[in-house]
Image 1 (tube, rainbow, N blue to C red):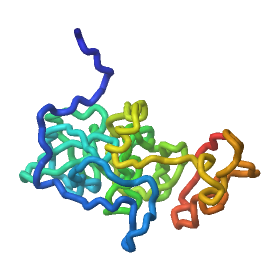
Image 2: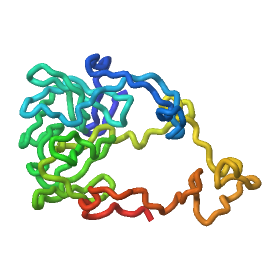
Image 3: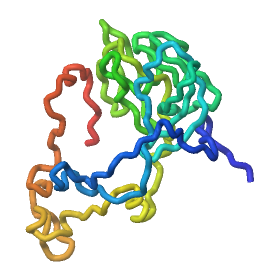
Image 4: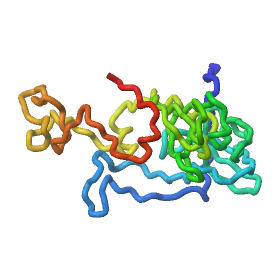
Length: 266
């Protein structure tokens, strides 16, 4: 039977083991802090996996690199790519959609705008899709890094570049900051179904119990006979704080760079 693949679908390299020099073993915390108490719930267990050292900054300037392989990374939703620079050094980078083995990428202030290449925002044309965006010059990219995400360059104005983020938010970023051309790979990740509880456990996720299924002593939503409502005007967290319509973003210096807030789901 002939397999029909969607256009620009990234095909992973078969029988490729991770690069040994770019692996790191990270000790699991089980969601516990330094005092041994649980600080983040629903974390624990999971299969053993090695962390791949991904170069989010791609700091090697004006040195071309060849794509050696496209690989699965158990630590993130996107795929990664192993590249080899002209000086012989190998690094992992985030793989964009449409990248193929044998392609050449480059990082510099102004380079050819090909998929996977990285340059300063001021040299990227309006309407271009970018990912792995830095918010400070000479720093690594931190925006638009998950599977299938990207931002769009809207305009350049007085040392800043306006970007439309995946959340529909429009914000300013310094034009000297770097961004990679393209869309992050594995955009089909959002359609993945867990299927069963065991798969979640292998991913390191412990079960989540509904507050309404607990006793009143354990949760504000607890108690009642059968499928009773929560009995409150608004939902609460296990610690009694408001859990609906509450702003979660604190005071940050970057708030002044937001030109337009994200669209509400209401």
